[in-house]
Length: 398
Image 1: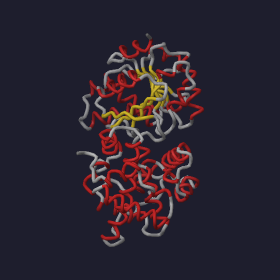
Image 2: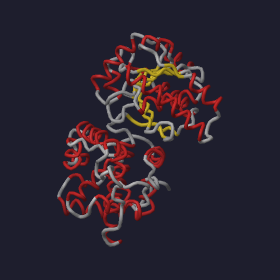
Image 3: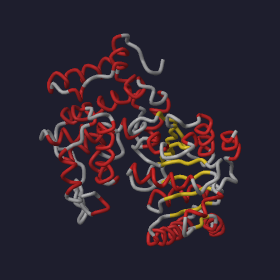
Image 4: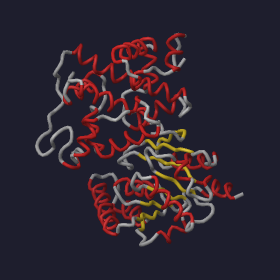
């Protein structure tokens, strides 16, 4: 059968195609070529292609200067990457990864066109961070070969890759792709095709609840960042991190997840972020976001007592834990993969389910119940699984 051919053909000799020559697409191409694959990097924008090729050479030069690659190795990797003038050259690819704009209709059109070019045993994958793999696959005659492969930015440095099967995806294809990418030195986790997958679903409260705390006037951006870093041990505060990711990207993902969850209050976007998005204050890349990067940004600093900082930290943490527990309850991923995704994908200091075990599910539930009673909002509703764990005095890792 054709699916067996897909499974057997994914190897170090597989030609990899990348569609989209932006930062993410170029990063994935670098990863694939470094792993020994002949790699095609294509973009419909010729100027973007030229920039990508120039930037790629600059990247390899820097790696040589830093002693991370020899000049010979850099040249060897670089020569594996080709920049074709059309998708027609993708006909020899065994795996194609799309990394273009987060627009379902545009992605569907690309996949439909691509299927007419590639061979019957070519795996088609989307690097989408929040859109439905099943929806994208619906544009293809052979939806069983379509999956999600979600890298994190910058792809050459971030270890995590989420591998997602849609409703029609062949399970063996998912396993074989996961094995292939493990061989690239990445840490892979397998996720169900639900909005945001693991990381972009579970991480929503890190931004959303921090924004809510700011909007209530409890603390400013710098103070909230201070609380999450100094008390919580997070490497970056939520507002620093949103500015790094880009408020255009972060807001779009937030709104997409919210809509795909049928406007569930737990994922409701913030007006503060929407206004920054409208003002084109995207963060570091635009020079201004929550902080002003035209000068030195305001460093996170203590602005409240340690007790108040602990309150801010705990409020955000219990929301994160609740989301992780709900993801496990709804079979989005295994408990191990959920914790691994959050530590390797967004550098959380601990896995959230392990963190819950340390605190005690009853304590986490009590904080959530207090918030729900105070605000009378469904955004604070506890996960069924968390309530069961607290009632039965159980731990996720026993």
